[in-house]
Structures are given as structure tokens and as C-alpha cells.
Image 1 (cartoon, rainbow, N blue to C red):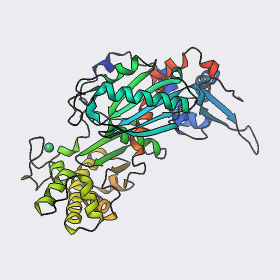
Image 2 (cartoon, rainbow, N blue to C red):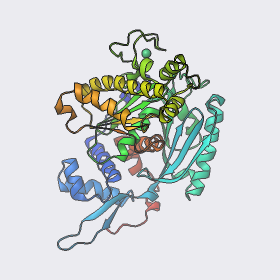
Image 3 (spheres, rainbow, N blue to C red):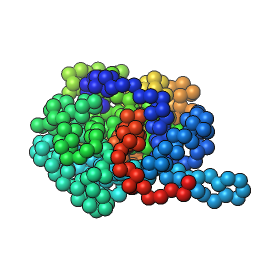
Image 4 (cartoon, rainbow, N blue to C red):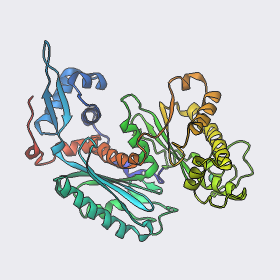
Length: 414
Ligand SMILES: [Zn+2]
């Protein structure tokens, strides 16, 4: 989720059809190992001649490489890929107590990475200076320099006005309210910086790591609170004000007595969030239950009260997700956070509510599963956010016109 109206995005000129086609082709090449010209003709719906014309331009400037494969007859199919030497991306997934940082190639594959501890309350200048130091060390490790950086993606644990990259009234980031993160990096790199909420980026990372065709993915993070990132047709859906996916404050029928931190009653977060479960356990005399992770540990250790709390929470989450599935018809729901891989009963509780309440057409191929990427989802999503910018009509055009890209060409056999 992010907060604020994307006014600046609307003021930009609309991309031309040719820019859109470049963007579509580049993203297909980045996501598809062994991508061929025929595949691009299929996914773009354009003629072979039109696709070839755009593609040849990208090959000429050294952005795309074509490697001729072997053939048992007829013309061999060339395999297309982005030229990794055409630049790198910087990605960071900032948490309250630690940060994961990576340098990736232009297909979001990690070249060098590190995770280190921090205290987010040290404030933006200290935290971002530390992050930049690690970026520079990782660039050296990857054999790259700051001038190779094409875009920077950063996830933060709070609401973000995406169009400006400004952190807005973050509850767990004291000193960050109104801080424009991109301005910090603009003084240090000649590349665009994109900032988003960590749950949105985890959704983007989970989407990217899945098979082609999984276009509509919801990532539901169940931790202290409950939030949801929405990927629609391969792009993050943030909504008009950036508040899309705020499922933690949807009211659960029959829970009206529970008071939520938002001031309303009966919110999902107030009856199924990790804080709520820990509070319920303390009221039952389980005094060591202070956080969501404590609840998870107690349930994993067989504490019957903790197991019951988690089971009931899964049913309540399932009720809300059933409504979400009816409304949105996703390809997959990915559950993240400490409870995601607790036991089969947790996922089963969510699934059974969805299957009971939603019409079969929406559930026939729906998959509800725990995160495959775990802690990696956020950093992958940050790299993909940067990648999607440089592959966007606006970004692709500037990349194609970038002076000196020819010098990075490492040779094409086409
Ligand atoms: Zn609420």
C-alpha cells in the first residue's frame, strides 16, 4: 500500500504505441528464458515485420542479444535475452531492524547481495547513507561502477506516496514522515529511484518468480498486522489514493466487539493479526506471548491455546479473502509472514472458507499457497520495481537513447 494521489504521473505525456511495444517486448524478453522472435510475435499480437524492426533496433544498440540455437531442420530459432552488460539495478528491502541490499543484472538476477542490522529510528539520512555505502561495496564486488546503475528500487516498512517516493506518516519509522527518498539518491546516481511499501514489493517479487500466465497475484502478509499487495496483469495495483489492499481493516461479521487500533470495531487485524492473537493468549495466562512470532513459536511447540487462536484466525482471514476472491478473481493468493509455513491447518483454514463461499468459476484454478520466496520476496520485488521502470515506455526509450550503450555491447551472433 502507498498513500497519495499520483498526480505527477498523470502530467507526463502519454507514451506512443511504438514506446509501448518496446516496453512489452523488453519485459517479455526479461521474463522468458530462451525467448524467441515467434514468442514475441505471439505475446505482442503484432506482425513479424513490426516486431523485427523494434527488436533489430534494440540489438543494434546492444540492449538485447540474440544467440542462434541449434536446429534439426529449417532456420534455427534465435534465443533473445537482455544484455546484462547494459547496466545493473540497485535494490533494497528496508525493515525496522534490518536491511537486505542487492545489485542485480537487468533481468533482476542477483550479482551481489548482503543483509545487515540497523535501527530505522536512526532516521533517513543515517540509514540511507549506510545503505549507499553497502551499494558501493556490492558494486565493486560485482565488478561494476556507479555509472552502470540504470535504476534503484527501495521498499520501506510504511506508507509511501509512490509518485514522489515520499514516506507518509509511517507508524514504525520515526523521523521519516515527508522524507523524499529519491532526492537522496539523485545526488549520487544518474538513475531514477522508485520507492514503495514492502508488502507491495513482496507481491511484485512473488509475481515475478512465478510461471508466465500467473498474472493476477495477491500477496497477503499476516504478521503483527495484516496487509495485501495486489499485482494485476503483472503490474502493481495501488488504487486512486494508493490505499488498495488494506484488508486488515475490513470488518469480519460476528467480531463487532473487538476494538481496532484504527478506532473502528471488528476489523480483521483486530481479531486475526499477530498482536491481537498475542493479547488473547496473555488474557488466557500465556504471559510469554508478546509478538506475532511468539504466537507462532508457541503454536509450533504445541501450546493448545496458541494453536486454537491461530486456527480461528485462519477462518476469519479466509472469510475476508473469500469476498476478495469473488471481487477480484486472482490466479493465486500467496500467504506470507510468520504463520505462512506454520502448519497445513493454517492454510487449510483459509482455503476451506474460500471454497465454501466463492462460486466455482473463481476457484477452479485458484491456488492458495504459502510464500515460496520467503524473505527474498521483498528484495526481488524492489529489483523488479526498478526493472519495470526501465522497461516501461518512458524508461525503455531513455535506455535505448542512452549514449554509450554501444560500448557495453558484448557481441551478438545475429
Ligand atoms: Zn481497523
